[in-house]
Image 1 (cartoon, rainbow, N blue to C red):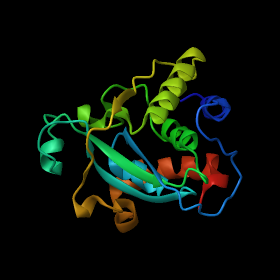
Image 2: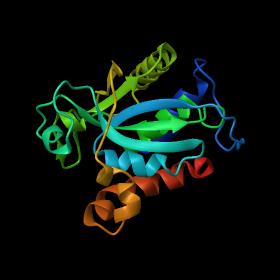
Image 3: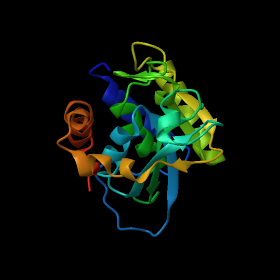
Image 4: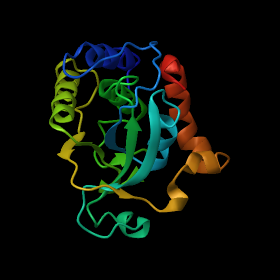
Length: 207
């Protein structure tokens, strides 16, 4: 991602008129409202760890979506079930908007690599947004159109936009993986850099 990408993404996302936008730095009490966003951007452990630290997020559950086959981790990792590893984020839209959820999403993973994130290769690691309402669909489509028009990335964005049919929670040992295994090699090498990027660039959106 180019150095200017982060600021460009924020400018695009926070100037869209669709949906409710809250400026970075605003802190609001829990309104009691809840919305969910289901996103795939490589290994679900990475996205879950980041979103668990985001203000307004009340939970991030790792799981699978977008396929028709078995939903066990062993089967999904073969790439033959059609499922993507995803995280379903539950958030208060009065505290953190869907646009801000997407701002983090497009900052912490590479949306230009087809069916891979780093060393994780396969359709199960594809970049994908599973919209859960018409408004999410409109916002996500507008975001990706703006990213393309403004040439924010050096390569084309390949993020897929699909309706969410069904979300399957992953096995218990995948939940809160980073919190329970932060000293493990994968966490140190792959997840920590994503967390560092989030903590630095979205400092005012941390819990």
